[in-house]
Image (cartoon, rainbow, N blue to C red):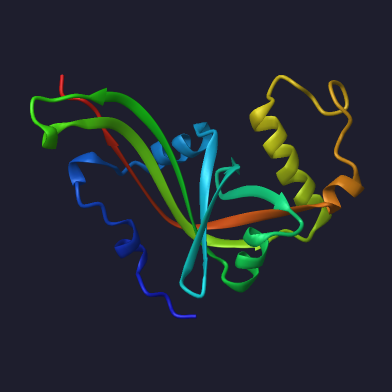
Length: 172
């Protein structure tokens, strides 16, 4: 499959004054975000779904049911796009065209694949639990993931190929 866009073309930001170019800051934003939107596409039909996710500093992990459109789409076309965002304050103005909103957003491009290795799946699932429930510990506060539960879940990793981020804040 040929790539229609280079990474630079995918991540080009028109408003360079709003671009976040520091990779460490983008990585931190990915670690902080609660929900991502995962876009897949098959036969020129886009599909987007919201999901919990975990970024370990190299790859992004998420899970779905062991049957469904996300799994089917990724098997047919592993290219994905993920997005996370935060809304700041609404910015009213004197003219309709000048109304706006503060925001921060990250877009990630990559290839997703289904994890097959049991140890890797468990690591990803535990990473999700640790992210969303950091005060609860496996084996102390809840029963650890069982092999049966692990095998009922489709767990994906996304190799990050490119990303971009931007932020708009109100003028002081």
